[in-house]
Image 1: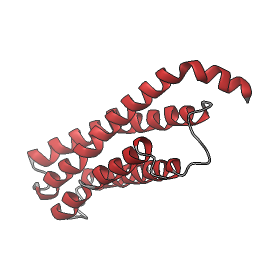
Image 2: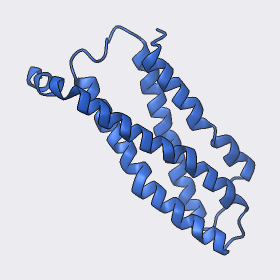
Image 3: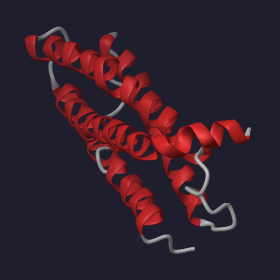
Length: 152
C-alpha cells in the first residue's frame, strides 16, 4: 500500500483541483434541479413547459450531476488515500463524509423524482420542492465548515 501513497502524494494538487471542480459541477446541479421541480410541479401535464422541463431535467442529471458526483467521490477517495491529507484521529472528516453521504442520498432522491416527473406523476407539491431546494445549501455548509474550520 506504500506504493499507492508514493504515487498519489505528488499528484495531490491535481487530485484536489479535480475534486473541487467535480464538487462545484455537482453542486450547481443540486441547486438548479430542485428549482426546475418547483416549476414542473405546477406545469400542466403534457404541456409544452412540462415537456421542456423533462428534457432539461434529464440532461442536467445525466450530463452533469451524475458524472460530477461520481468524479467527486473518486477524487475524494484518492485524496483520503493520499498520505498526510487526513488526520484520522480528528473528527472533522466524519462530518464531511456524513455530508457527502447525505448529498448523495439527496441526489438519489432527485433522480427518483425525475423518473416520476418523466412519467407525469406529480407525487410532491411545489412547496415540498421549495423546501428541498434548501437542502444542498445546508449540506454544503456542513461540508465546508468541516473541511475549513475543522471544529473537532
